[in-house]
Length: 143
Ligand code: CMP
Image 1 (cartoon, helix red, strand yellow):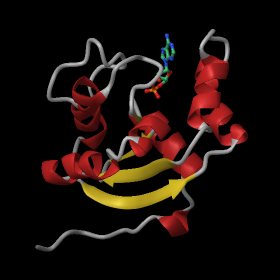
Image 2 (spheres, protein in one colour; image 1 turned 180 degrees about the horizontal axis):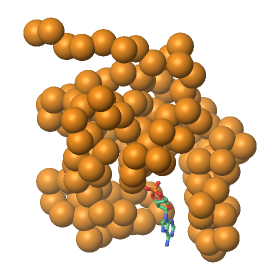
Image 3 (cartoon, protein in one colour; image 1 turned 120 degrees about the vertical axis):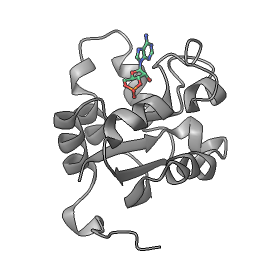
Image 4 (cartoon, helix red, strand yellow; image 1 turned 60 degrees about the vertical axis):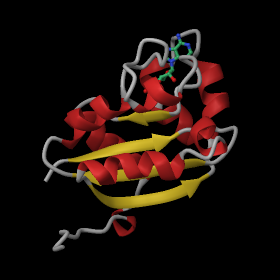
């Protein structure tokens, strides 16, 4: 079954949006298999965003993601990677469609509320980076 990595960034947590955001994924029918609130280290932030390390916004991005608690989660379901990206919306909240998480709650690209893996390889890498095997629950909803 496909899995994806999602992080509610410090702006989403500080604005009290964690519950609403988790509900959107649950309501859609995806299964939570990992969930934790954590303070992100500089090392974890730099590794997670390594692909952007030459970009001018990299230092600010690392500073922001380490500035307060993040809610990290792993969701499971058929097609969850692409479907979660749809629920999240475009990277820039100013162009994200209303009804998406960023479209409804975000105000600028540097404060875009949430991160979601963009492809199967990155999902696998990000899940392994943020979670240990022991932190993930393998379960199938039966109700
Ligand atoms: P995310 O989906 O976490 O992946 C990379 C992040 O870099 C992105 O969301 C934005 O938060 C951030 N980002 C991308 N472009 C810019 C930009 N031009 N200025 C500031 N931050 C950016």
